[in-house]
Length: 259
Ligand SMILES: Nc1nc2c(ncn2[C@@H]2O[C@H](COP(=O)(O)OP(=O)(O)O)[C@@H](O)[C@H]2O)c(=O)[nH]1
Ligand SMILES: [Mg+2]
Image: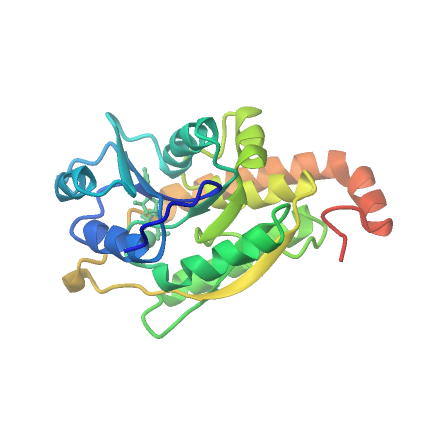
């Protein structure tokens, strides 16, 4: 376990009913980083109980429990606000269900420390366990994101393993009521790119643990694809209004289009 706490860079893990994988995921993150915060998003499966016990004995781990389910984005925002209050400048978000590579946390943090004005985005490297439908579906979302940002260089729009500049992300979320559920990850990169935050893409292997190993997803095909479609419709509308400014910035190589 890492003993010395970073003052600037925090690992933030939102969790909703992630079962027994939660404790394993958090332990893997703590082995790589300090501090690690977990926001329990109104879970009803009791997965927070062993975690709370662990946190009581580990000053590097803090657990926040939301009384009701609010969605991934809302859970991240809850942690983000508290993080800003405690002086944190950058937040690495990762999923609670063992899909993201905890071993890469230090590398991602180093990238962010080297270029604090950027967002460090995980670019998923899939193995055979990845469902084909999810792999194909994200190409559509990536194509829209590429257009909405006028080719700002977002490698993957949906992957949640990322280091964000905390104040910029909070500012973007404060301004509008969306990004609170599954629309969080994509809308965050688009709006941050519009704000001039340059994406830096770093490869990161993704796993899809089998259900018998505790693998669990709350992504609902109909509901969440409808949410994502509505999100891209909103972003496209705003994109059209922003187009003259984006084109100018791109031509002049102003952020996020700088080298
Ligand atoms: N789906 C979902 N995930 C949430 C929610 N609140 C927090 N999360 C966390 O967001 C992450 C991604 O969710 P998940 O269901 O695994 O989506 P998937 O990995 O895209 O299939 C996990 O760490 C969840 O625990 C919520 O209300 N719904
Ligand atoms: Mg998942």
